[in-house]
Image (cartoon, rainbow, N blue to C red):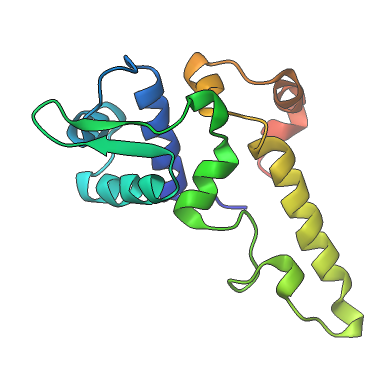
Length: 152
């Protein structure tokens, strides 16, 4: 799986918002500077997050962006889906929608299993946990395995 720049930037922007005073919106300019995210790209990401009801914008001199709901209720999976679509796709289709012939039908099971594994991680981790720097113990346990850090 590849994590797109769009997903990475979206998560970084949301963590930045979550670490600030929740009563004050954060400008896109401040978010971009804090996380080194190009302004135009960030605006498109924030628009996607707004469509997904993850953030809301406030206009005016003290305007900016804030969460539409609690950061503890927004998962990494929610964010990735909002900016990039399904967690796993094959040729732009969801795994269950791909047609294979009899000899390669088993591939569909691999894609569905991969999606399940990604869900098990991405749906457990919330923006608040990221902002607090504390992952669920089941996720931390996965990173404790030295093999997880090997680039193979």
